[in-house]
Amino acid sequence: MAKSRADIEADVKDVLVDALGVDEDDVVPTATLKGDLGAESIDYLDIVFRLEKKFSTPEKPFKIAQGELFPENLMTDPSLVENGKVTAKGLALLKEKVPHVSLGDFANDPQVTKLSGLFTVKSLCDFVERKI
Amino acid sequence: MRWMWIDRVIAFEPRKRLVAVKNVSLAEEHLHQHFGPEGDLPACPVMPSSLILEGMAQTAGILVGSVHDFREKVVLAKVASAVFERDVNPGETIRYDATLERMDEMGASTVGIVERYSFVDNAWAPVGRIELMFSHLDQNRAGTEFPEENFVFGENFRTLLEGAGLRKAGVGPR
Image (cartoon, rainbow over all chains, first blue to last red; front, top):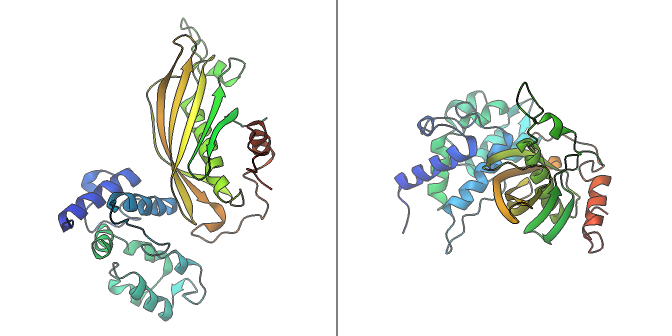
């Protein structure tokens, strides 16, 4: 049976509480993984592994490809990041590859250091809901 | 040998599981300070849980490193969880049983069970459970470059794998 949005939100909350050691009450939809919940680089891999485990079923494995949830390759590819800013090509790729992230007004000042601030609890739930 | 917190690898299932043991001895200096006598209180030598954790990291680290024939620089990146329920004292043996949970290009996660054998009780008893995350250093998100030489799996590890008979089976750094 398909999971409801509420089920997905509850499961994502479990994953983040376990992966980041945060208080359940802090895991609200608008909370950013890095700024609000204190995620560091290895935590992103931990979150990916835990999401896979949480949402896999014997009938349907939930496998997240590298860069599918968090676009790591954007950090180092020179055609996608120039002088610390995401290029037009990079922005187009972001829209295509990470539709679960709401870019908002990021395009006006696309500093790559601000990219991680776009990943919220809601964007993780959106990602799982699209993929499941 | 410096900073080796496992004595021998006793079981190995490629890409799946690795088991190692350590004999805890009163000859180890750190036990004299952890905890030494204080005032009227006698000494109470207990294996520090931080070093039990290091032993599990070495056990699980060999398991993770073996998947790519020790070409990757495997480093402990995160202690996802570590729960201890029983002390380990001199004269006891620690068994580290590490299982590979998940692995990709960036790194791996492992789950480890720690037990201790007491010659007083003649039985194994649970000590703790440790979940770890390892990172492949050359695949780091920041794109930082490290020396080409694999400084993680050095001479100590070769000796350890030799002693466990694993080198003869073709396991270990080339």
